[in-house]
Image (cartoon, rainbow, N blue to C red):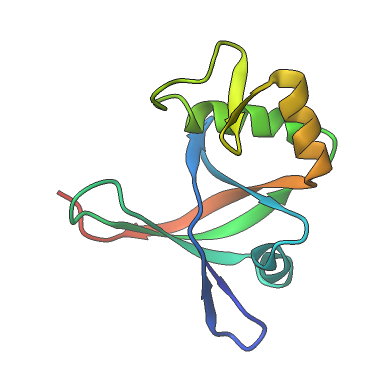
Length: 130
């Protein structure tokens, strides 16, 4: 994920993303550098490497989803992200920092960490695809 610093230079970080209800989502926290960048300038670029030499670039405007529904939205996001995980988390659990968490434990972690969701409104897609 590439965001823009105050001076206009790029700031790149590795993030996980998932398609949730037709929208591209990623997770962050209130105090992340990229959150500060996006609050000032909501433009971002994602570069997705699904496999091999393929790559997809996505230019987007980012909406920051915050508030009391974010823990539940985070459960939804990470459920999608962990769907293909091997081994899979136990039923009604998600993995968090390498440990299975119950729904209640996970939701509390989202509150404690001051999590938020980045929702990407795609402007254009381009890149090398097979």
